[in-house]
Image (cartoon, rainbow, N blue to C red; front, side, top):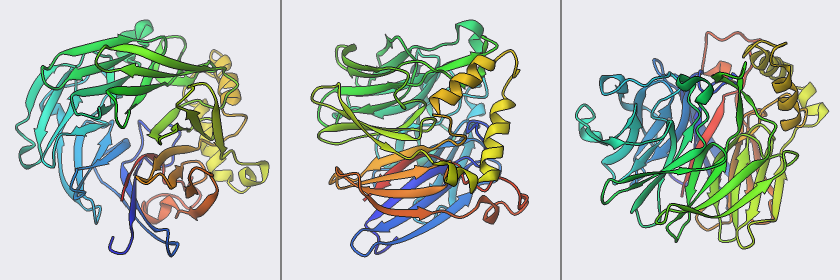
Length: 406
């Protein structure tokens, strides 16, 4: 890592459309904007599944690969070599295999908090086998979690829960008071998986992640919902929505992933819609967009990727009984047969925006706020790291959530 000011970590889940069922790996992308040099390292881990999100402890030495496979998994932040793992099933069993410790919140270099089953748990890296069980988190399936600016509140999103059948739609987020342990659940009109705190206020943002259950009951094999989307600005102290943004379903803002923020804009990428939306914070109404939708020529160059995407979507449920979801998915994706940007992170000086495009298998660095492409780096094929994979198989690495250090 020496000589590279920026280290962009991206969790990997392989080449399927459903990242909650795939492989588990990490990509480390190093970049020097002065010389335009870059380097990368990629590693997949045996015995771990459904890589989803990553984070690095405050000193930048230890990384965490969050996953939906019920493991806590840690790696050396410089080499990506595994440094430890433990099964969370020894502590609590979830009601569905979709629930895992996908995200953690670091309290210091050694200590972090995460959700397992129906509770929060506090761990120390030096003694993973002896965590402290905390209070129930109160939401359906806890997902992204972040501490607010002061560290006083832990805010967290929630996924829809297949174990609850028809009543599995979450439509809420949670807030934990880190001083008292009090948990509050805030009701919303739409489910929000992902959250981000404001950099200087006790406020956080939650972005709607709207899906539809197949056969009207199956929240495990869900479909992209062709519905309007929301951004909620929530006061963590009063537990109330201060402002919200709503946009028609025609706006390409479906299936968001990473959220980042500048002094002027809330920035979030949308894997289904091939876009990065930049929402004006002052007025909370107007927005800009970076469009990474591939054209027909780009799609024609990726037959294996398109075939895998189409097959995986059709394999999720009864095609005839769920045709409305397939048609809605086509509209939400703007008739593109690939998914797109799942990682986007802004540098601390707000000059560079790092993104990872899952469908096109490349990493792009944009100048911010101009959004001019500064660097676009095609990434290697999955076959280089999964020797048993057929040469004809989909070669995408499976980019998901990312974190930027530097």
